[in-house]
Image 1: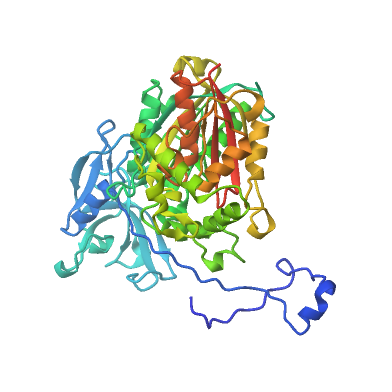
Image 2: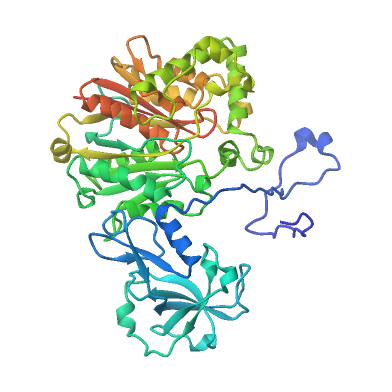
Length: 192
Length: 358
């Protein structure tokens, strides 16, 4: 946060402060102004620890591979994997390489851009259920007007140029429509 | 004997599991860390999540630097189909307290309580400064060790402790931990050698401070039939209470812990003999302060696990104290024990539980 940002005065009403009785220290406070706000910039540096399963997933992205992990009991495949199946509470130990194709399970139209690589607004941000997975990935939809995106639409990953691949979600630039018929919205229930 | 906060339903700790505690568990994320611990706590009594009426956890986003980080660890519980669940941004001992209240209210008969902390991603003494009052203390970024040094200095100047006594506490804690396979520090140099070390934050030396640890713990609470089914000798919670001292360090006597003493009194610590006590003291001088606050005598085995000075996973070290006492009661090694947990700086918040085998 920049130190020279203008601070607007507090509005009256709900947020106004009661007048403080300063008679006991009136002399000391002579000529001073009431403090309304203090600025406390703070930052802490962390080393992100993705964990065993997510590390495998992130390393896959650097090779244009999408790895989910299967719960041995339910057979469900989670992507991105966090290491534990939320239904069985068991470790997901089996790696599964997933298709780069999926279906839009939900979406919204974004009018306020954020992040360094956000597309120009308005754009469509979607949840994509990869074929073979039980939960959806998050990503922007491009190469189609934002107001034509629909639930059930088939999409595929568009990868970054080889030189830009890294163990990061940014290795997938966006998702684009493919020439396959929409899937029924009913089949996407419970997979967002 | 019942203390002032005994509750009307008999509730016991019937299962305890913990991870090893290490300086940095660099490979695993939080859910991967705690999943085996939760699984063990349930499996060793033959229970599943379907047998559990309420789940409560303790952790803090400030350790991972990630908002709502606790939600991700719920995967380790098996949170689908939906479960009755809650979370406290406190040490897991307070999560246990919430579960105990839930059971007292008749809303559950069994509970799973777990907590974990990975301190390694951040700079812990600085991270901990974020729990201070935001107007006067936070802007100064006082480290947790620096603040503890002020308290230790006040105790030394007041004649309540000496640097040698502090080193003796460090030595006793870490040599006791030789018998605790989960502990992080399991041996100590001799007291004279410790005293020859330089100050870290005068008058604290390195040995006066708890290690920085990654680790977790899980316990199962049960009442009535479930307790009898799951444990031959449940560790009954006969009294439990928690109290808070003012957050303004300049407005209280730092050499004593009145909230700890009051919680101990309300929990009934002094009503009978105390075979074992596990005190959550992240600094050696605080260990002495707590022994004095609870009036523990020679008949009490204090911190046989090594305590927080041997392993101090943030958010879990307090619940671990309850687990350690419960373990000794369930095994028959002790009949009556006291577990203490603290949260915040300088023993500001304190929870005390009295556990008994009968």
